[in-house]
Length: 343
Image (cartoon, rainbow, N blue to C red; front, side, top):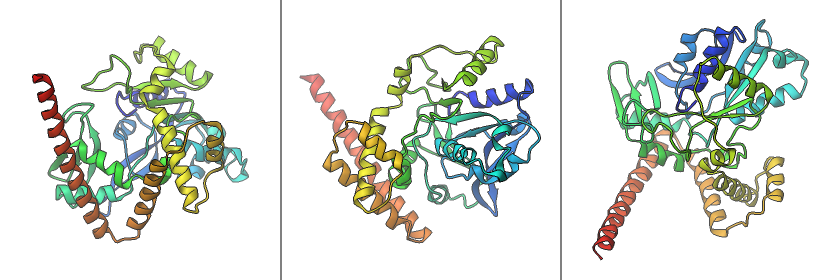
């Protein structure tokens, strides 16, 4: 998982128990001196461990669906909600070309996700670090700083560069695909088990991090019970409402609705499920928020028509400006607190 290593531990546990012989995971690799991601089937504990850490860039997980269909052993799939949706769609189509897909996948493990970046993030990291050939990239390196304020660790062949987390947060506001902003499934509800950060839950390890586990069905619940009984993991029970509130689901609902309305007003077709969400959720559309969403979508689409150099120049200029503004706001708020305390 994003923090406590529960996905890694769960996969290794299942391998040792011979319930699975492989797992569909994502690794970061360097191809032609360019950092990217690659979906593959890990078949050893070492390969599982090597696929650790969150990857915040797009990955085509289902490109190897036909390879899964040809396997003669069961595997687990680890994916974001969009990956799990795609997998379920393939299975439900009952396509004869992938008829064994469902039977070969024993578990679906979902990661809680609030969106990712375009590959422009890699270009930004290269430019910022002056490392032109990135061989490894840890978006949230909790060994540098801490869990909450983890740095981005950009690794070259002989050196590395640590970038403060505020750059990563700023990238979210510039190059997160608008499609992520209309995704209704942050919590990965179609997985057997969802894993994520324990935001808003009392008592989690703020230095090294912990994991949130949400079992979605009897299969997922039974697996976690077995792991607890065998001492493979430790856990405490928290309420689902506490977990959901910590993930700021009400904010996500509002974002989904406003970006859906923005997409519609710009003439784009939207997923039918979003139409259902609009009907079922009694959230008033705020004109200002809708306008901001329209502006974000339009700016994003125009930006991605430009060449890489212009995109990076825009990102750097935008982030530099935002960081200065945030620093000014911080100083003003600090001065106001001092004045308030004196009076």
